Image (cartoon, rainbow, N blue to C red; front, side, top):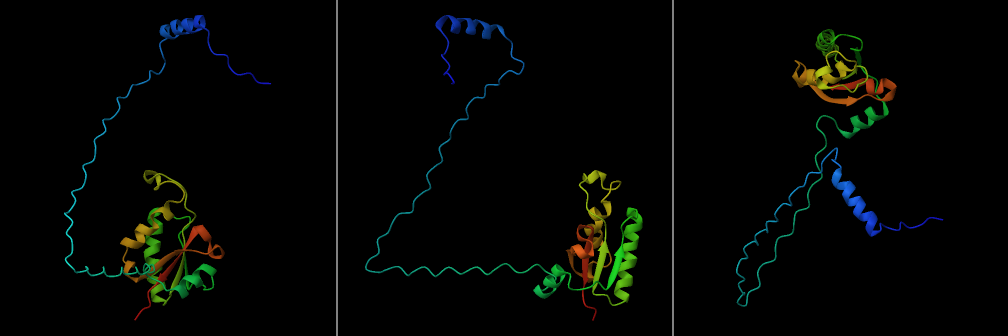
Length: 185
């Protein structure tokens, strides 16, 4: 059975006040002055004009917004095939285990080789991404994965890449990417 607290008697309250006054707090409570409330000005109202026998024209109907355009690069057929791993890569480029300099050089030469072979889809094995601060990405595991999108965007083959997608689990999952190259004409 629980009892309700009885509260302090007048003598106990006086003792408590004397004790509390003699104690220095470890972390003093800062008193914050309340911010003054500034009233917002009322927006100016335009004078209402009464129509003289005329009814104003109805407002035109609002246009229905079109759905957002699909992500650039691939049509839905490609997206479905990549999601199901229903398409085999034409070329595999493995950067896993290389240093950053070796991986960057291998990426450029590998993509040139894939284009020369007429490859349409490249499986790029980078290794799984690891959480790392941006300053540590040069030395830690997952550094290649952290840099790969920058290398692709700034590299000599950026114009030939139609899309970059995460690989299906069958082709390496989080440790790999699909690069879909543009059709050569």
